[in-house]
Length: 188
Image (cartoon, rainbow, N blue to C red; front, side, top):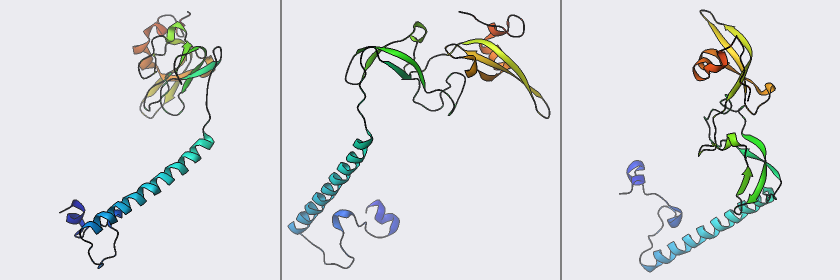
């Protein structure tokens, strides 16, 4: 007994044998021919649906080819849940750059002129962002406690792109930011 029949108490009417209930049973070579015809019909309809979808996709698709010397942006991380530049979620930057195209390696692969600090890209195209300095501080008052925040500027980002981080976490990860007086900086 098929799982469908066990679950619902009746035979499954698949597209191959769509017959009305109570119709006479087809036996022998007739059922084989009937099944072959149905399979051929299914394949034709699938082919037409695929070609229709391909034509829809092709109208929106454009060929991108870059020449040596062009500047392109590099996608940093295509996965969700990855912390980029201290921001997690939809506001985190997805591209960095622009970088110069040095040469073409394959049909869609290019060699880029990456700065030395980006040579340490991980396999998932993320890299460890370095904090440069603390730009500002603030306190958030809750009912029973106060949370300390620091605004951190990251390397390769302007002060406008600085992010608010928990002071406690920043002290653990980047103690050098707090070594000098209140707001320290790391100048490279």
